[in-house]
Length: 64
Image (cartoon, rainbow, N blue to C red):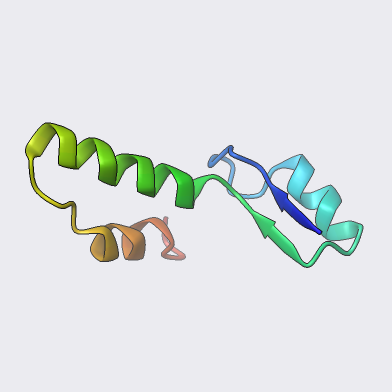
């Protein structure tokens, strides 16, 4: 089973906590989706590829 909550703040939502307690193996929040949407918007507005790897590191860092 996979649980995907499109919310990205907080990083772990109530749905995700309940899924974790229920033993769900694959639980995702909306950060990855936000990253990919941002990359597409960046391309449309700026006309260049967004530095996705760099932004991913920032988004998924423990400090963030």
